[in-house]
Length: 317
Image (cartoon, rainbow, N blue to C red):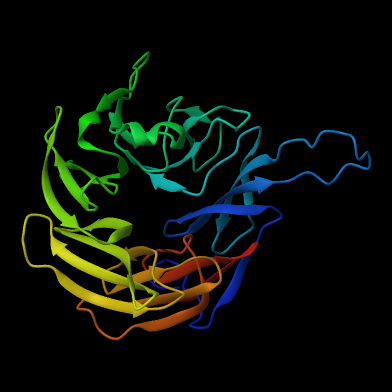
């Protein structure tokens, strides 16, 4: 224990084994939260239709017994986020519960239907949510804004400014979006003006794998091709600035995909079966901290957590 919080050993240790396929992770000071899909056992009748999986949301105390917060006819996708003591996830059209954003209290209870439409990227605020367009319409451009009040309908924003791959916001409430590859072959990050357009802040001819806001900076990962091999790069630049730093590069597979930070380190996740890495915030040498990391690596103040198959491991920082 440190400052009243559980701290794991420095060596990776299995914290939780799920009896379902893990789709998302998030964590607070004392609990890990896991979303996933529980598939039914195969029917003995080969002609019987296969029933859909059940959605599962679990609360796993770091020093206690796991608690099932929800199980039912819903299908959470691969993002789980904790905002103001509520867990959020999104579902697609093939979910029995329909598409859209959903939430549940970390103490359990009913599932709240936040929206009836949502893409893979979203921002949660007390009075409004922003989200990208669903996969089947994302190429039409723009993102949605939905006020959190009864009978509110999502309103499409900046449709003419290209295909929005992700939407994000800073602590001051400014909203930004990443535009997918455009006619000139570039990607770009814009700051929304609150109306129909925005200001281009960043442009790149490399493909974005991920983008986040870290204080006053953008942090992002790209990939390009170099001598027939994928080249993954980690960059940092002030949101309103010109000087871009190259913090890390790696030629060949497995490369970088996701990026997240804490007070001391920048963490780099990759596809399943790759490595979970970190480097100091000033761009020091890359350290491999787990032989298998993926997009579901998360952290709290003292610990790191990541999924390997149906098991979640943790270790102290």
